[in-house]
Length: 237
Image 1 (cartoon, rainbow, N blue to C red):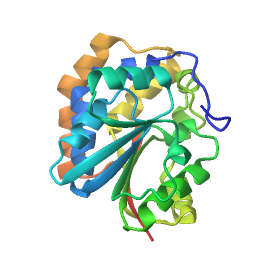
Image 2 (cartoon, rainbow, N blue to C red):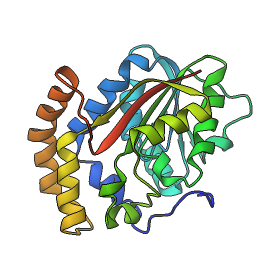
Image 3 (tube, helix red, strand yellow):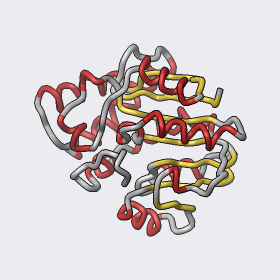
């Protein structure tokens, strides 16, 4: 972990909280799938839960997973022994590395100099004019103590993120809020009640019964005016 990354004191806490969110990961993957082709680099791949979905995507020839945490790397090597893995960060990739897509899910908020990180993604994509598939927590007004536990520097608004993408050399193809209901659930549970952890049963219930309905409406009827997260696909301008 570099000095520009904010450490979280809870180890596997964030990944443990999301391992039950199978439909959540699938919904996110389906949003990104049309833009995943050729060679893909996943930044902050964790233990490879999302990596597995990318690798199975039609048109994807190769996935390179990048992960700085040695414990997560060890777990990924055990789970996915054939998966190409770089233990480190974007700047640890070989000079001249290029790809067709970069996937960054719940990573950017952990990095103090997020503009530099976005510029690193742009360099990887520039030669092939590839796509950045980015997912971050949204709305600073619901920044809660648990965000600090996770090691989050910030939550994002659409104008802020669009401006940073433009400064890094990107043009947004789509940029919208994700999980409208989750915004209120996050505010109530972690801001109002001040809870500092996830209840597995609640996560499973939301993932099985609420998220599929909410995401179906958001994707097929209307994108929400705000939400728990922001989903972005951007190309190098």
